[in-house]
Image (cartoon, rainbow, N blue to C red; front, side, top):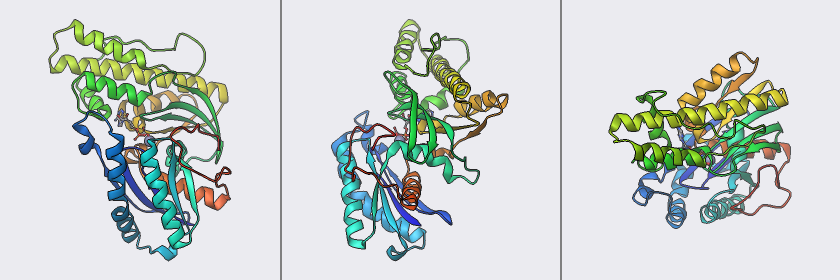
Length: 334
Ligand code: KG4
Ligand code: ZN
């Protein structure tokens, strides 16, 4: 089963070819970050128009790099949601058109399912079932992954997602959009303990998160002090430690509650080095194995969509509803 995967849910256009016998054959990505940077965030209409421009050349490149022509492709997978509706419709229209022209089946993939399955692109892939911490720009969820397509949400954020909190705090610190990775770099030179940030929701039971208070705490810290570069680095450090501590503690509770032996970290914030290290230390004494995708497959990519598509087509698990792009779409529903 060889599948062409297309991701266009936000500000990255990404295409990949995955073969379930040979693994990932190629992947290509165009980031729109430079285009949106002038506006301080993603401009949906510009995103849609750029996806239209980029998709066909990227598909040609990915097929050439995979030394694969269209006759060897068994199906086309695309991100059907959640995301920016215009951007999703571009991907869906493109994939559907290609499917008709090539006479191949198409399958709409939930973007977060792609993230959840991304560690399966790695040589040391986790088996089902596992616990997943999904930390992206739009979502923060603890998910009980029973099998392909069987996802139970154990906890989620009540307000900002972890990535969103990184991006908003980065903006306060004067870092350019999207900020999360830049804040993490700044935090590396910061001092631990100078600024104490709250650990939201740790004082009560349950597996939900809340991150919106952290950017306010960062704002208060910034206002209260004359800030030079090292002061801003100290704030970045304190902020990152609060997020990492909170995520790690909720993972520990979820592992205890579910008795899962495998923990998967997925989504853009999964690229964060402090988080990877902290979770590694945490699971060491618990008899739990930790799995991460490589950093470039933590953030948005086409490989995870091609992989999810190959798994779904092989298992005959297309969406029962027949598809259709959806801006809002809860994981685990059809
Ligand atoms: O999964 P993703 O690429 O897109 C969504 O589906 O949302 O996640 C993007 C998010 C952004 O908020 C970005 O700032 C954050 O992941 N991110 C990071 C790092 N790299 C990306 N946050 C913290 N540390 C990083 N190294
Ligand atoms: Zn994503």
